[in-house]
Structures are given as structure tokens and as C-alpha cells.
Length: 312
Figure 1 (tube, rainbow, N blue to C red):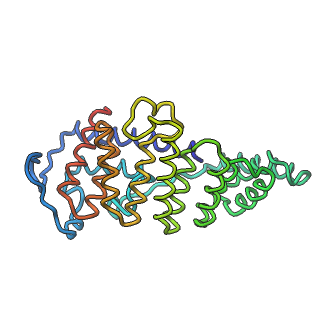
Figure 2 (spheres, one colour; figure 1 turned 30 degrees about the horizontal axis):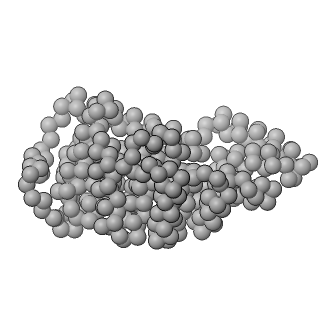
Figure 3 (cartoon, rainbow, N blue to C red; figure 1 turned 60 degrees about the vertical axis):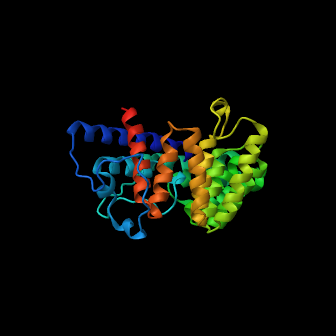
């Protein structure tokens, strides 16, 4: 499931680049409500009511398309309840083809045949659980993964998969518990676990716990790699966890907790240490807009659009 998510993320980013390129080729002339931006002028803080103004009206259709595309692609890392497309926008979902369903069901029968003779066979338990999850049968998958956890209590991957499945079942407390076990029995920090546990805790309405977990994880990263911090560019390639992604998750957790200033501080550090990375600008723009600071948010989104221009 994680590989599928990474593939979809890559495809989403490519699609956003194509959309941005098409808009520029058509040379769409937009009438912007705010006119040209003077970066030396003082920033005026808008009232909350400005949130009712459409994003396309505020920053132009071209930039809005880019921002919406990136929000869909990077939703896990951005402040919750942020930007959303217009109500009539179509929401697509990837569904299994009949051929894929038949293939998975055939594979499942093979695993079930093995389990009928050897109910505790670890390979068959894991294979059947993963196949059931791919088929969307999360309840059955959860049961098998719990059985597998008894056979392999020190395998972090088993508990990570259990965390994913319980999250799909909206059992957020159970999901968080499974991710915590995965984190404890793992020798290394795994980003899938960091993200999964963070999202589970936020869904369970425990943002304070998510913040503490991420801060502890950041300390653990820095202890193992003294240069492994968001401001370092020399060791990131050697890390299993991207420090920038951890900071984005931390900002999201602060935002859900209602600690907006702390979230903005996280994004400011990212922008300062990685001025050529669009993610800090995007996250800060979203949280500023949600708090009525449309002018400041617009500046952030324009920086994102500049990054998109460079991806063509």
C-alpha cells in the first residue's frame, strides 16, 4: 500500500506540472483582485471573513490549479481542513479491474488452502492479510494480522500493516497502538510508521500526543545523526527519513492542536533552511489563509507557482 501511495504521489506531481504548463501555453489573462504584489509594502492582515472569497479569485486561476493539485498530492503533510476544490469538482478513486480482482481472489484461495492445513503458517497469514487488504476486506485482514502478530511479535512490518488496516477501519485508537508497537520493536526510524502514527493520533483527536511523538522522533534522528536536521543538506540522502517530511508532519500536528504560531514557526524554519523547496511555502500559505491572512498566503502560493515553473 505504501508503494502505491508513493507512485500516486509521483503521478500527481507530474499531473500538476502538466496542468501548469498547459495554462501558461494558453496564456490565460486573469484579472486579479489584488493586482501586482509589492514585496516591500507592509502586510495587511485580513479578517476571517475573507476566507469566503474563492481561492481562484484571490490568487488567480493558474496559481489556484497548482495549489489544489499539490494539496491533493501532499495531503498527508499539510494542515488539516485546509484548501479544498469547488464543490462540483470530480473526486476520482482508483478501483480494481475485474481482472485484478480475479487474480487477487485466486491468490487468496491459495493462501487459504495453506492455512486450512497450517493455521499458523506466517507466510500464508501475511500473504492472505495483504491480499484481503488489497481487496478492501479490512476486517478479515485485521483478524489475520492479529494472528500473525502472535507468531511474529518482534516484526515491525506486521504491526505497521496492522496499523494501516485498522486506520482504514476507522479504528484510530487501535491503529495508533499498532504503530506504536511497530516503532518500539524497530531498530530504525521508518517514515511510514511516523506518518501512520501521526495521522492515527490526529484522527483520534490526540494532536498533543502526535506533537510529542514527532518531537521525540526528531530528537532520536538528531541523536543518531548529528547533522540530520531540517537545515542540513549534507546527510539527508543517507537518511531513511526525510527531515523535511518530519517537520511538515510536526507543523500539521501543531495546526490540528490549535497551536498556529508553532506551526508557522516550523514552516518558517523550513523556508529559511530550504528556500528552493516548495513544501514549506505551500504549508505556510495554507495555514495563513485558514487564519484570515490572505495577502501573506498569496505570497506563499506565488512562490509555489515559481517552483512549478521550474519543473517544466
